[in-house]
Length: 121
Image: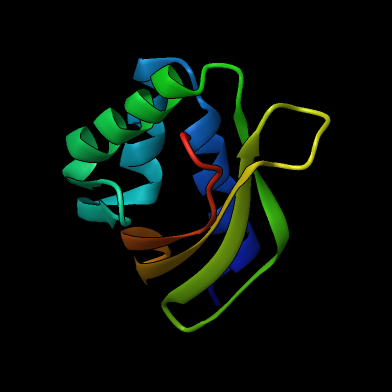
């Protein structure tokens, strides 16, 4: 049985990890080698491509952190969860919902949707 909450939590931890070597370890542990990430603003293929996207978001928003919003849900090898991105202690100004396809409980692909993005972000 797939533990959707654990997978979503590890995903959020990955996006918050600031140490590049640790991020690459997390990608190797939790994502398939052929993984793909895509949202309306960016996309990346494989561990290297996803890692570059994460580093770019962290550079653009150095004081922001990701957090889960609500409870992840899914069925079989499909997972849906919502997240917020912003400074600690306030309601996240940036929010989204991601859909994952899993393979052997590892992320094979993420399709992200941006639910709330302030102008200029």
